[in-house]
Length: 253
Ligand code: 0O2
Image (cartoon, rainbow, N blue to C red; front, side, top):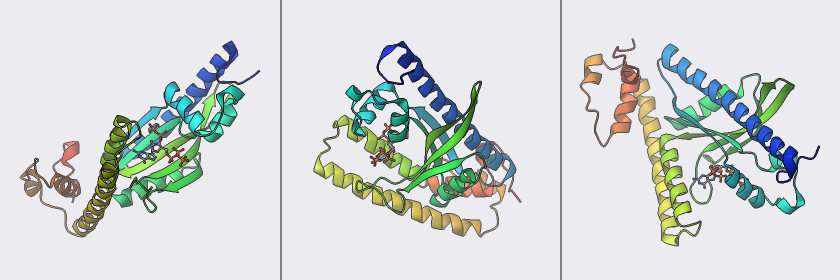
């Protein structure tokens, strides 16, 4: 049976299968991360995971990336070739509070016995020239189908809130200007990326300092304003002091 992405009925079925397998793999990884998040939330005094989201590449975006990766559709590349070149058909994004959390959550996931780490790209230590920072891990997870087990590749992006804020703005600008972003905007984005990274470093330092202190009393935490320019700092203090997000206002002691 041919596995051409664009010809004939069997290809349509192959394409459906290709996308479904990626969705299953993505769902497996999301479940793993949500379990970790719930465990941290309910059984530990600190939750490093702010959010877990996922997306399957749209057919249009997949076609565009197949071409960007140098595959010629006229050559009818097989789904195996596409799988090898386009590794982010299934994508999961984990947003963490602090940079150290990014590595901590990655490490916990990477040590799960059914996860195989295929490749890691550390754009935090080595940001892209435009300022983009994130930790990218290509993982392989087994998907159990009626006909057997299939390893599926999923790209997991780990980043902080500040990195995520920057990346979503950059993504919007990139598409607004159809990839022809004016030079001064590019320079502004690079500066903003540095500012975001400096904020991450400051918050990390404060977080470490606060962690070394006794937990804050509940009445102090409850009296903290919720709207403030330092909302992120307050959120960190609250998390350490009393977990108000989970509706629990105990001191955590
Ligand atoms: P979308 O819309 O998220 O699906 P390579 O040619 O190997 O260097 P590749 O294969 O794109 O590049 O891999 P890389 O660099 O790991 O990027 C994979 C995904 O990371 C991208 O997917 C984006 O989601 C995100 N990403 C990478 N670089 C940037 C960046 O500079 N800015 C932003 N905002 N996101 C980035 P897609 O398919 O490009 O996009």
